[in-house]
Amino acid sequence: MQKAVDLFFKLLELLVVVALVAMVIMVFGNVVLRYAFNSGILVSEELSRYFFIWLTYIGAMIAMRERGHLGVDTLVRRLPRAGKKACLFVSEALMLAVNVLFFIGTWKMHELQVTNVSPVVGISMIWVYGIGYVVAAVMGLFNIGVLYRLLTGRLAEEELVQVVESEDLSHVVLPAGPRPEGAPR
Image (cartoon, rainbow, N blue to C red; front, side, top):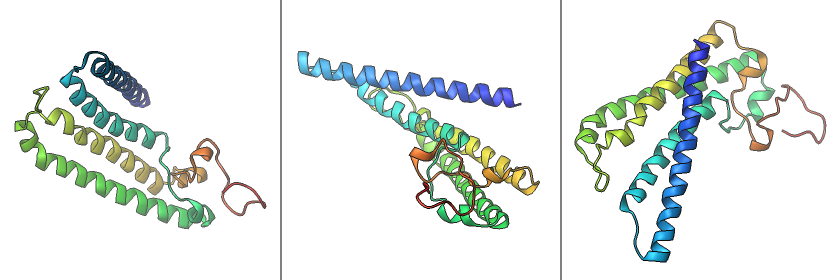
């Protein structure tokens, strides 16, 4: 199962790279065409916007898996183990609820988006906004996984804090409790 998950996220990382490269090519090409030839490619403007939407959501899924989302962990790190567990439970349960709402919202907008066609490319807008299904399902499964591991006691102490306070410290796992004077928080 873990191999399938790893392969899925490698595919997502590849999609991020492809979308980013395509966006750069389309936007740069349009700039050159407008500056040099006073023309442009309309499709590239619309597609680059759609790629950006997908890129954002796919990046959020990857960041969630890598526990790369930023948050404020100053208080949680100082709590005893039971307090950390309670905060993690509330946090994951709220995120799961939001993912359920996101999925339901995408479902309710599905019929409208299927019939709504993009003005230039001419594709159904569900191809753009349907990413809500994927994001809500993947992130919801991660929330359920963390809640399951929390409730069965399979989370290590350092996993009880799921966010990092600073991008500079995202690679450093600091122990809980008091820190020496001048240590990063």
